[in-house]
Image (cartoon, rainbow, N blue to C red; front, side, top):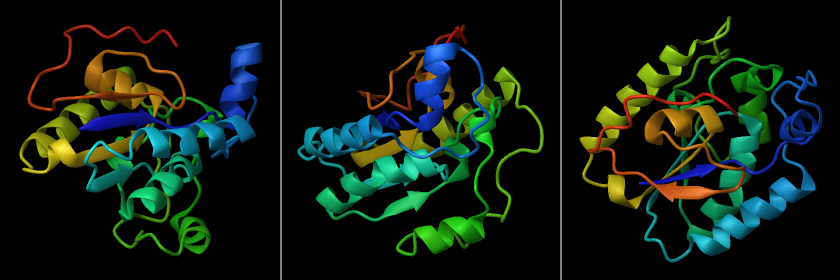
Length: 184
């Protein structure tokens, strides 16, 4: 499968500059983030993608949208690929708001409040990534799947820290490294 970290968000822009949480819940993409999403759509057009799984955070949905349009593939929204809940940006939008803003997507299988109520420890996201890895490895179409996700989730799947708008391949049948460095 291919893992794509969402484009630059308003949170990423401010956090990178200050290393402090700017207090932005469910941030949208910046102009650069939208450009990164469009660039990913062009770069991924010949990769044989037939399925898109996307996190319910707005920044991930905005990143997946141009790719889904370019490929003619409907995205499946799945909270299991969400970010580790640790900052203000990890407070999501209620499903009723997302369904209003993204009428072409199906949110009916997701609870109204789908993000955790309290900080998720590193082991929590590692366990979630392991569950997703097991589910994907059992599917015959994992090789044709794009997952639009986040730094911590991708790190948990691969052991690699990726920048906004960056994608990499992941074979879910191969276990991740034993140790993962959570330095962002």
